[in-house]
Amino acid sequence: MTAGRISPTGVYERLLRGHDLVVITQPATDDIVLDCCRQLSDVVMPAVPDDTIKVVVAMLEAVLRNVAVRAGHEVAWMVEEIASNEIYAQDVLAAIPDAADVSSALASLAAAPRASLHLVDMVATYRCATDALASAVAAATSARRSDLVELGIALLDTRAEREHEVRAGWTPIGR
Amino acid sequence: MPTQPPPDIATGLARFLAANEVGRRATVTSCQPIPGGYSRTTHVAEMRWDDGSDERLILRSDPPPGSGSFDSDRDDEWALLQSLREVESLSIVAPRGYDGTGEHFGTKCIVMEHYDGVALQHTFAEGDDLTRPREIFLQLAAAIHQTPLDSLPATLARPASWEVYMDEITALFARLDRSFSAASPVLRYAAAWLIEHRPAPVALSLVHGDFQPSNILVSEHRPPVVIDWEFARIADPREDLGYHLMYPVPPSLYTTDTAAFLARYRELMGFSEAQVNEEIVEYFLLLGTVRLLEQMLVGVEDVVQGRGGGVMKTFTINPISLFYQLYLDICRPRAR
Image (cartoon, rainbow over the protein chains, first blue to last red):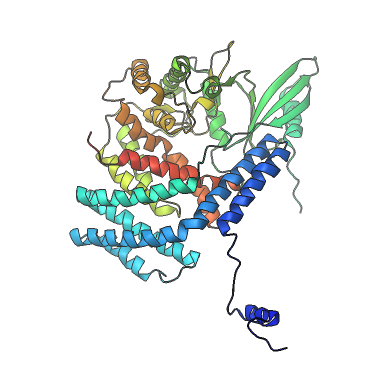
């Protein structure tokens, strides 16, 4: 049989070669993880007699809820924040040209693997953008540029709002 | 050569008592873990002595190596408990003995008497009159903060001065920012803000370090006691107030009537309003929680570096981000 596009054999061959790789996208990652959360809460937890293990199960469930939110949004959030942090740091450097930390952080960000959407590269780039933001806010604070400080804090607020969303109603389990 | 597996806690207790309680013997009839602790492993053990009497003991031990989320030194805690039992103004759960080598329990373990009471946290709920629990909380805070420093063990670090201490702890924020993958830009901003807003000084004192209503036990028949001294240090006493302000279990003894809380603490300590007020307690929320934040960041770094160590370390990403939110809200420019 000829290996064609609709032939199962052909699909396997391409998969093995690493070409045209397809993944099942529905249910999405966050759907899958949230279903695991429900299983933990509704099935596993009632069957656990040991109170100390119940705390561990509750923590696992909470962590999985964090993961579900992150799976749904974190790449998009990082892309947005990398761009906004960079623009802010550039503005601060333009206003305070001797801010060496900002200049250095921006250079690192420019050299980061920013074209890639693979998570490891996104995280590396996001860390550079975070350093640029931190350096820029610190420089604006030292220079007593309240206008720039406020802009920086608005970016920190955005980040905090997203971290709040990731916490997904977190409570100090076991206390 | 294969190593011996650690003994279970009940077996360890039986060995420990045989070695330390000369002239009498005990049978351990039960030994159960107490859930809820985030740092140490705690068990409650029931025993019957050979004279027929029953006794209950608390065992506070280190978790297995690599699995704990918060590090502290049992030797230091034991030395502190030994000192505090001699301080008349402060009631603690009586320490009974210490396995400082792990000879009996397979890990360092403090053995304490059992206090038949409940956590102060569990005596009140939303909507209750909190006057009495607040008074208990503040009297204990003042008793801790007025403990004579010369009664404390030499192992407890003594900063050269309040100014030196403040410089060191403020520098910790910048150090965390540079050291950990889960650090936030909020830390670098907070470090600068703390220098700009340093408050009026007070004398350094004993600070509990985890001062919350869950670490106070109350009973109708005995004075209340403070437990879990592992993070105690000599520091600015206002750190315990700031720490309590962070404590995320409602209702808060502080925020339900902040004016009454602060007025009573000032009265007990002889502090002025310039030394203790709402803004200063917020300032000390940062200083009172930053060591805990450091420990959580260390745990998350283990996860980042693939060293693992249990779900607790990943779970602490949540309070870490909560701390950042609190820090940002406090350091935010505003009309004062």
